Image (cartoon, rainbow, N blue to C red):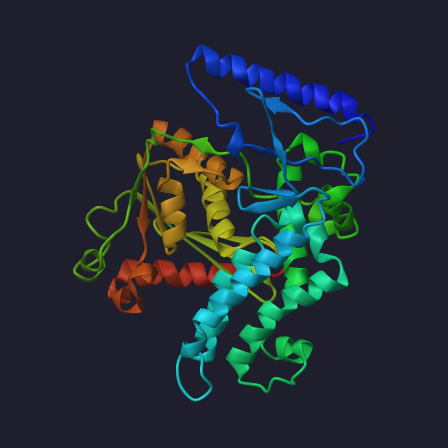
Length: 394
């Protein structure tokens, strides 16, 4: 409400009067009996604040309001929101209690998956806004009850078993820490996207960004951006069938020209990608450090391959991948990844001068289709290439 309740009341009444004029011009009506308002203030006494009116009736004051699944109370303590989230999550766990018996029912890994995929996602929804409500000892105790019930169902432990001990056994972090983790991830993503509200974090829920500064990993760029669209790709993305590889004596009939095999993998030492051009016998080794994913490694490998083969002759360029996610990402019209968007632009530029095709390699279809001489040779060389890339990063 601020330091000047009288000014706030006048602004609210002016907005409501504008709504009345707009409704009158369009011959619409609003029921004042179904309209309430919430005054957000930490003070109990609202001296100078007068109740707003709508169509001649005084609006009723409410202590909380629900907006987009988040309950906002007048003091922004998030107590009511935490209580309702915990209660509904417990009801969902009790509904599946009959299927989680010690001697029979769902297996522990299935119950673990249900807890992580459904219960945790439900509790942490919009955690960027209400994570300060999980900082009190009472709120942490309430939230821990939800995960404790799931831990008991998974392990079959006795009711007197400490919650922290059971969580350590099944590798489940405390739920209040998960809420903070989700809030940090969302805040960092919005900050990197340049949202103005997150440029200068000071206090409130935005202050979680101040906790990210000590870790240098958060100073790295993120592979997320505002949605970009590519409606007319000049390259083609084809998913080959099993028969295309098993019945062909060499390469499938649709695969022509200069063929490049691309494969990526992630190990304990880091992430790498290998590129092998079978007609020219050229190999490329790429090392992307520890934080890149296999998907990012294969997309980056296509970019590196595009830069490498600029001087190669040939009217047709073909890429063979073993990742269905990569094929779908390059074929998609809408993308939120800068790396994928850059790769699409590079392929589009090359397709102006050459015919470009991207195909699914044998690994997607199973190892038994490696009977094809071309498929087995190319996949093997890719595997050797990325293993030689080393643990270093670019």
